Structure formats: C-alpha cells, structure tokens
Image (cartoon, rainbow, N blue to C red; front, side, top):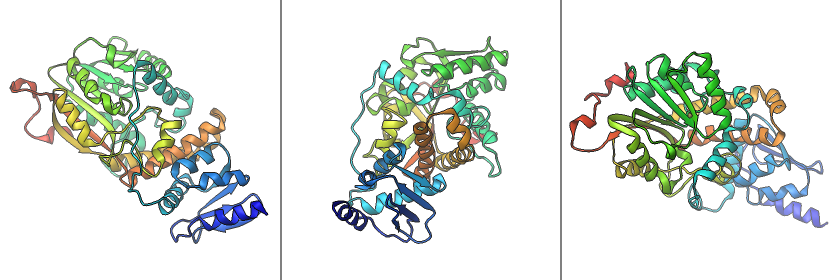
Length: 401
C-alpha cells in the first residue's frame, strides 16, 4: 500500500505536455505517457529509480540513466530533447540557467587529472566516432554539403589562415590533441610547430603520427603544461583549451600566452562560452552532470569575460567570429556516429562510460542548438601604440582566401 501511494504521488507530480514525447514504463508493468506519440520510452528498474525524477533535472535524469537505474529506448537526440522539456516544465521558475556554479580551484596537478579523465578514455574509443584525423573540436562547414572530415580540415585551415601562418613561423598549439592542427601547419603552411597536451595517450599517438609523416624536424609534440613553457613563438593557437583553465585563471592564462608571443605575432583562441553572463555552465542541471562525469573542473566564461581578460592581459582583440551553429552540426554528426557504432563502442568501454558519452554528445548538440552555449574564435595580437604589433591587413578578406 505504501508503494502504491508513493507511486500515485510520483505520477501525479509529472506533467503531461504535448511536446514531451515520453513514455514511462514502470517495474510493475504500468505505463504512462507524458505526451502524445512518444518517441522515447524510459523503463524504470524499481521503485528506487523514481528519486531521479524528483526533480527531473537534466543532472538527475542523466545520473539515473548512467548508473543503470533505468534504461531508455529511442534515439539519443530524442532522449535529450525529452529530458530537457521534462526538466524545464517541472523545475521552479528560476531563470533558464538556475543556480550559479561555484568557481573551481585549479593547479597543475588538478588540471592534469581533469584532462586525463576526459581524454585518456582510450584512443580507440575516440577513433570510433570522430573523423579520421581525430579532431575533437568544432568543425567549420563553409559549404553545406561538407562531410565531417572536410569540415574539420576547413576549420584547421581557417584558424591557420586567420593567424597568417607563414613558412618557418614558429607555432605553439596549446592543447594539441592528437596532432591534426600541428601536422597541417607543417605540411601545408611550412611552419615549425610545438604542440603541447596533458593527455599522455594523445601525446603518444600524436608523436607516432609525426613520425609516420616524416615531420620530426618540424613538429614536436610534448607532454607539457603551458605554464612551464619559456620560449617565444610567432603564432599561438588554443583550440578547445581555455574551457579547462578556470574563470579565475583566465587573465593569468592569457597573460602567459602574451609572454610567449613574439612582438607582431598573432593568437587564436577557439573555445566554448556560456550565453548567460551570470552562469559558469549549462542550464537545467546539465552543468553538474558534465562537471561530475565528463569535464571535471571545467568552467565556461561568457564571451564578455573572455574578451575582458584578454584585454587586461595585454592582448588586443582583432576579430571575433561566432561558430555556434557549426558546433551544433559537428556534435550532431558525432552523436550520429556514436549511435550508428554503438555496439563497437560498447565493446571498447564499460557500460557506464558508454552511457555517459552517449548522453553527453547528444546533450551538447541540443545545448548549442538551444543557444545555451556558444563557440567563438577570437583573434588577438599584443596591444600597444606601436603599429608593428598588429600585422593584419585592414580588411578581413584575407581570412577567406
């Protein structure tokens, strides 16, 4: 009787909404539709699974799924859309982004552990759903018919063209991943490249790729923290890196890049931002899930904060480009790859990791599509009244040749 009363209160507290498209299948055989024509079915394993719907924040729902307290049937994009609608219709009115996130502490050891947690899942895991170059950042779809591989190459070329990379320029790639940008910079643009990462597995594979390409004399891949560099570079690229730095450390980060940059050099920062200036992450509880399972200690600045900290650090912002729609499409393609190769991925990682990344990729595509988060490329040089510090043309036309 007690369970029946609890179940009745549970079901009465869940909204029926014409856009939910969600069916609950309970452990006792009962089913309830929370909207017409459900595309997603959630199967609760036992009465204890109800607590993940109280309240049904994205964080709670994702936690219940990842921990195996309920299963979901349906495409990942439909699962995430239904979860977001349920969370939005059930949470108290407190603004799109809910409570503020507390700034995380950062030091070399914590940052190294966080990077290894995310990027050292296994190279084979990432290889199953990324493009052949294994580029794990927003692609650039300069033409709608582009494949993911073509769009990733176009993104790398866009970045290297924006920084006006020249033959024999010394380029630093901060957070170099598996080396795709570093290799392209040497092969196509003739640069001399240092790529750094805190991921041991990324470093090892990137070094192998450099050797396979015969570029040992032009490309160095190092397992190194940017704070330990003491060299000068003509160009610096930072792609998908500053999200790991921490809001309180952005000024120091850009200040360090300023110290590493030659006078007259250029910096490109390509990174994710929140669209709410009062929040450090994603709304409806999604940020808490990402912080726990995917990006420990990750924090997203608002664009205004990023630009301010760059300027305070002595960098003049020259150009800002929004690529939010490009990242939505990139993530949607990653999520589609993930769904289509789900059996192979399940064979490569444990079930919890499989579920975390399935929800994460589809969830991020949804977040960019909803304009909860965005992606900006920011080009900068050293600030000052010396005209030799800014070497760019007077027109942006050069970026798209």
